[in-house]
Image (cartoon, rainbow, N blue to C red; front, side, top):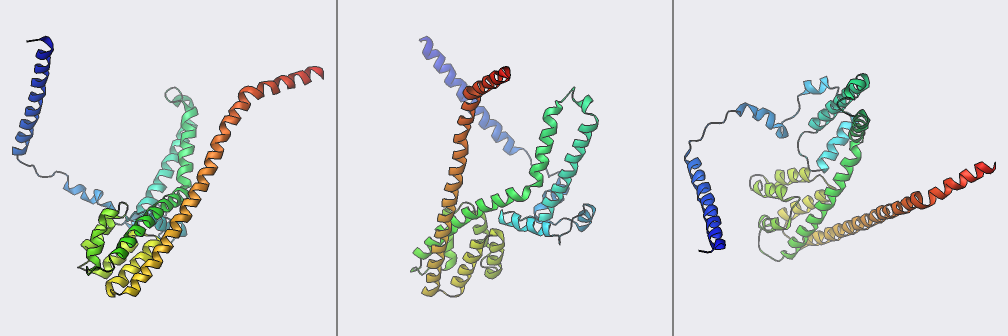
Length: 297
């Protein structure tokens, strides 16, 4: 048997042993008796998404649900698609502020001792940058909401066109929406939840769906769905056609603003090589000219 054939045979035999060994170990693990969960008591911690922050915790953190800043963040988080209690975010933000402030104080007091282990010139600006990002959280929450609102508008636009295409069909609005699920991505989970809750309480399911979307386009879309649910008439499909035109205009405006923002960014990026050229080639000549004038004076 040639050397290369023998090597190939051994390699194939090794691969086969690995495959059959893995299958045998998997079969053995399937026969192993299942042990009861040890950490059932941690469901209180892991279930924070469906629970509200206790009022006692908010009072200790000096947070009130009636504050204008709290309500603004609550609306922004709902627009970002976060259905959990906004008090968790506000409380975590307050705790993070306190921790960063404490770290800055520690660095300021023991900077000489800490400098032997960690370069303070990197730690201090990093902590200040993190504090700045946490402080201006409203700015990036608004940007995230705008991005999600645009994506939701695009998917609502596609669903509305599909519903308009199925306007002549005898299917129920629930069946029509069920056919629209493959066309969605950002709101797929919310749409599936809506359809699952439909026959239990359609009106309440639509209201909860509207709250989960948290956008103006979602509000108008849910109102149109509710009208189609109650009255399957061509007039409401004409209303749907008008809404489709509104969604299209908003998508086009968002595209134009994105192009304008991209052009500004590209303009700034294009100026970087010019500044670099000035630093490399022109600035030495300027320095030499200054030295010459100083020598003449």
